[in-house]
Length: 338
Image (cartoon, rainbow, N blue to C red; front, side, top):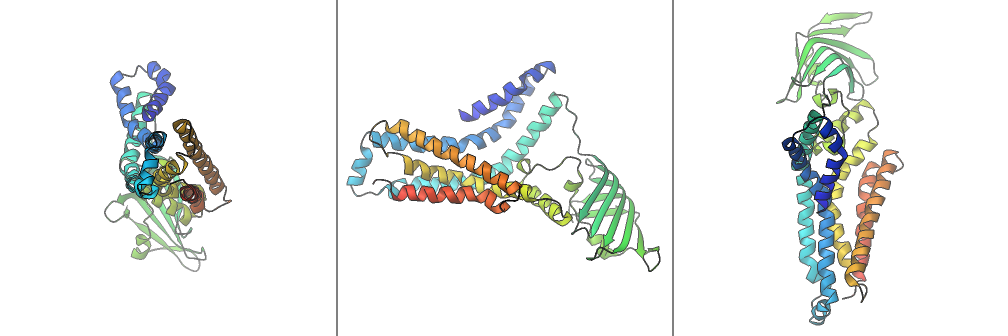
């Protein structure tokens, strides 16, 4: 239900533009279908929280938990399958996002832009990219994404002290998907001497250094939320090698691993907060669980902002909400009545 609501919100936000662009019903439905995995990814933890809270509340309300405890079965033993299932969901959610949500969301964005006549291209003009701590600098007049191709490429090679060693020129360069490096065509190398630059044989060691991923040469900046963990890692490594700010990107990267643990935390909070009152068990338990999970999201937003502004490390920005609420959930479980 929550997933459907999220999908409808996206539909209503764009419905006016769909009508203006005479979008067909089939195209709009396809956009909604491609967006469904993302909405499920958002809604699944909340649905899991509601499910556990509702079942336990019903058992408490009918005094079935009292009978269970009287028979010698502890609360932890009874809910252990819930925790095991939540751990399985944590791993499943990570792979679901990486293998399903990211590619379908990319397809959804492309289809939606096509319907709304939004022209987007990853081709880039006058590209300058630094790599290996600014020891390698790429300068190309044009990057063509369809062919993974650079045109009029100059590569400046420097030592650790940033002194010029050589300049390599190639009218064209293609990304080699098998070897993960650039293959240059018609190479000319200029090597520094005491007084000038002279044409010299191509240094294979310099060519082996040309391994900066083609992803970095695209015109659009990389949104870590919308790429796989592998692509995100490549982009962050580029930022580090280039000496560019990377805190925000790395915190979002760590969040990809930290956020799936919300299933375990939601399950523990539901168990720890349910049945603490004798009256209106379902209403109060649901209210407490919702407040707890909202506080988790708010705290996560705050720590991510702090990581972005470098007040805390990217690791703590992503993982501190999980650590804090896991501790809170453990305390609630310890003092839960049994």
